[in-house]
Image 1 (cartoon, rainbow, N blue to C red):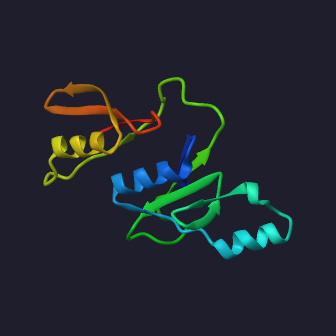
Image 2: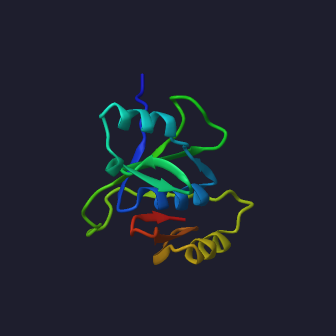
Length: 144
């Protein structure tokens, strides 16, 4: 039996980065339950300082998550973005590879990502395969 898992990104602004990656992956940001958040504050389990308003909705300040649009339930793929106080300072030891389908133009995808705030770090080649290593708006490396 295998394990379920989620990928977790440490970041400064989890909501902005979740929005960026949801658009990049064509996934969706998971909605947060504003009534539940308000109830946790009312019961003293949280405070207003634990929350932020993002796109007009009250959400937990410390995190946001995304998942594929067509997937629901506990076994779906899920990426969590969590706030940390320190900036990214070194190269990631693990990274995401975005693998466009044969009908997608990788050059157009890369150009679109750069236009939205990604940075090209370098290009790589191995035999007939090529890729570009990029960084998201907070510096997390990924390849296309």
